[in-house]
Every structure is written in C-alpha cells, then in structure tokens.
Length: 427
Ligand SMILES: Nc1ncnc2c1ncn2[C@@H]1O[C@H](COP(=O)(O)OP(=O)(O)OP(=O)(O)O)[C@@H](O)[C@H]1O
Ligand SMILES: [Mg+2]
Image (cartoon, rainbow, N blue to C red; front, side, top):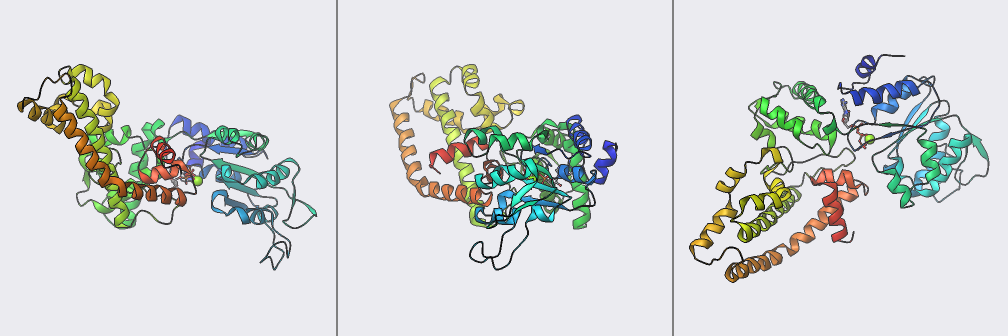
C-alpha cells in the first residue's frame, strides 16, 4: 500500500492533520476494490482529490476517469448525458449518442454533487449500481457497463432522504464506504501551512515577494471559522497576495479580508461553481449596505438593552453575549471595558442621561418615541434595500444552483442566516 505522504505529494494535497490522513488512508485502502465510495464534507474541503486517488490507485487506472458535476447539468439532459440516447429520442437527437456510463466502461465515474440528481436519474443509477445495466434514453435495449462509482456531496443526505429528494436505497448503495473530510476549522494546524503554500504559489504566479503573516495574524487565521474552507482560504491568500503593498501582513490587514470579522470592506468570496463573482460594484455596494444595516440593528438592540439595564453591566454582558460577540467579533477578543468606553451605545445613554430623561431602569417615553421614530424612518429607507437583498440572495442561489451552503459562503453570511432569509422572503 502506498504511503500517505507520497500520495499527498502526488495529488498535491497539503496538510498533516490526522483526520485528513485518515481520510486519505481510507481512500488508499478502498482503491483496489470496486466498492462504491461516497465522499462527504462541507463545500471547499477538498473532496475532489479523493476520487482521483481512488481511481489512480485502482486496477482501472488505465481506464477512463470521468468527472460529472451532477448539479451543473440541466434536469432535461442529464439522463442523456449519463446514459446516452437513441437517434430521434427527443427533438434535436439527430444522432445516437453514447453517455458517460458507456464511455467509462472499464474505468471510474466521479459523480460530484450527487445529491442534486433528479429522482428519475436516481432510478437509472441504482440499476447500474446493482447489475451494471442501463438503457439509452429512447431505447429498450439493455446495455451493460463495468464502471466504478465514486460520488461526493456537501449536503446532508439524511435530510435529503427525509425530504424525499434522494432515494434511501441509492444512498446506501453509493455509500458502501463513506469518507468524510472534516471542515478546515477542525484542522487548525493545517490552516497556516495551507496559507503559506498558497501565498508562495501566488507570489510565483504574480511575480511578487511572498506575503508573510505576523504572529497575531496567524492566530486570527487559525481562529477564524472558514465557512468556505480551503477554497475560501486560497481565495483570501490570493487577494492579499495581489492587493497588499506591504508584504508583512498584520492582524488588522488580515481582518479586512475576513467576512464577519469587523472588516470595513465586504470581502468577496469566489465560488468555484459561479461564473460571476460579485464583481459588479453595485452588488458589492449593496452587500456592504446590508452588512452595515445588520450591524446597526445589532447595535440598536444592544443600546436598548443598555438603556433598560445599563446599571447592571454584568447582567447586560451576560444576557447579550451572542449579540456582543456578533458586533465585536470572537468572544475571546472582546474587551468589554474598552468596547463600553469607546462605542456609541454608552455615549447615547450618557447624552440621554444628561437631558435628565431618567429613571434609566425603565425606558423613558421620549427615548422610546425617538427609538421608534428612528425605526420607522429606517424601515422606509430600507424597503428597497430589502428588494435588493432579495435579488442578491436569489442570484447567489441561482449561481450556486440552489445550494445554500455555497450561496451563503458567497454572500459572506452563515448558512443559518441564509436559511432564515429564505424563509423570510418565502423563496
Ligand atoms: N488539502 C488541500 N491541499 C491543497 N489544496 C486543497 C486542499 N484541500 C482543498 N484544496 C483546494 O481547495 C479548492 C477546493 O477544493 P475542492 O474543489 O476539492 O472542494 P470540494 O470539497 O469539492 O467543494 P464543493 O463541495 O464545493 O465542490 C481546490 O482548489 C483544491 O485544490
Ligand atoms: Mg467539488
């Protein structure tokens, strides 16, 4: 059996995390068999390397390796793409055409984003997996093929089964062996290693000196959530490599490239599957406005809390931990003392106190009115912003073929926030 380190080198995989090594070991072990493998893990964790390893180390290595992105093929043509069609099977089928399953006879097919397969195609796939048989679209002649299948998904397959979007029998057939690739945030020691490798690659590509992170920036890099995983890390490394004049990167500079990290600029996360990349200034500007509006609403909530319970600082901090973290960043970085000294909520409180609108334990009517007044104006102003937000979300979902995780990554928001917004807008 080939050594894990050698395989990593051969397939350009960076990292020494035990969970990553275990996943590669599993791929090496299963490679010589014909067992179907399902590779799972969040978007951008590096799933695409594993089917290549499995094919490359199998007895099929001289046969074809065909990678099919099931999410990228329109529902109307996917059966024909995979299984071929007979001449005249549908309008435009002027020739008989063989599909990937015929082409890959003796080789391996990688079905990427397998969770996106339409149910009718799932039935055909199940049949091939069970006995190697398939029918071309528009044909009744049973054909045979000898193909090994490796599939990948970043969606929760049990949820898809529950929602009857994926057949349970097919799931078990595909996942005889399942290989899980953990998210980057659970491979902390690999984060800097990957960043250095990407930084060095981009320095070469753009013919500039390699960027280097200061120690506290390295700590931030390790602490960050990386919801877009290695793809996002690579993207950040590229942006910094291209844009920063000073090649020694401080924590503040780095923060500016990490969404939800108190940056003043919206970071642009490129999604592999999307052609467009938020490059239009208008979209970036809208995104910036939504981020700002979100921050403003959070600050408003916190201000209200302070107005109600300002005298009991501990209580306010305790009860609004999540909100405070959201506004000021990671919990461990929050300096409550400093935050209170410097930021507006307390200033507003003091101004109102000077006007003698107390007592502060209850919200004075004047403040309450002012607050609601402000809220009304805000609502009016943001009506069209909501439309824009809706448009932005729709576009991101379209670009990512409805995949929430990828769309959320592109929008720089959490999957849960996106889910909430989808519900809110009834999308
Ligand atoms: N360990 C790694 N070493 C080097 N590059 C990596 C590693 N993991 C991922 N990458 C790079 O990160 C990018 C994203 O990886 P990949 O396309 O395999 O993600 P994925 O898991 O298939 O995501 P998705 O579910 O969105 O398709 C690629 O450019 C890949 O080369
Ligand atoms: Mg992929």
